[in-house]
Length: 241
DNA sequence: AAGTAGCTCAACCGCATCCGC
DNA sequence: AGCGGATGCGGTTGAGCTACT
Image (cartoon, rainbow, N blue to C red; front, side, top):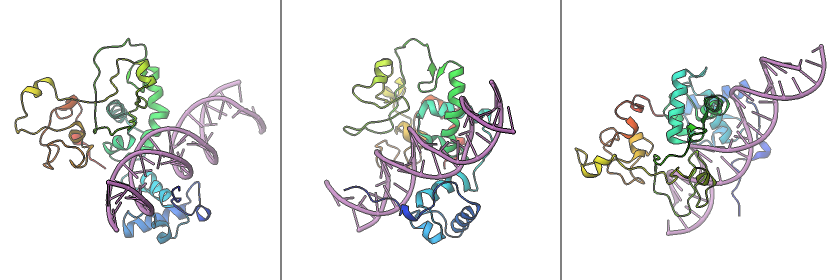
């Protein structure tokens, strides 16, 4: 059957945006707000597809964008977040106010990757390139994998015959996480437990999560994954998108 | 000055996911 | 529950720029 194209390609501009187009888009969104990208181009008088408008706004025109070079602190934060989240650029961007996923992705590919390689660190695994295999490996789970679901996590695609796993047999690519050992015997003070996704604010609701946050706010309960709450990695101070 | 190799980043493409019906 | 449209995401491309020969 096939999906219909997101827009009528024969009647849309492509390539670099002109100042005039930018102004039209800015004016329209200021007047009407974001949303309904599909109908926006027509309403705004733009010969662009909705996707293109959305991308232009999010990556370039949004007033809250920081622009400019990344600081050393931002570098380190990107590296930390990437080591936790993999190539989940939108999640990483959500924890870096004023930065876009596209910007971070480009910056990673052009600067940080090379920087890590120069330091002898594998940018995919965040381990020394020549490090011998170790026994322990952190395992992270954002959700219960569906049957036949393939999950990409920045370390490759997880299949039964995952070549990455063959190369790195110590890597547990099931990516599950459990609370620290003592919590398994010692319930949290308020009786709640919280999954990693809710703890980091990745899961926007508990609908598909199943943790016992019950909408009480992810900052209230939960264990301190990698020091997220204790300040080793303090993401609470960072705004969400 | 001309050629070209390398780099950067805005933009595109296709697929995944969400959500209303 | 299933379908289909809308939106979001990550990988990739290519134009423009700079550095080097």
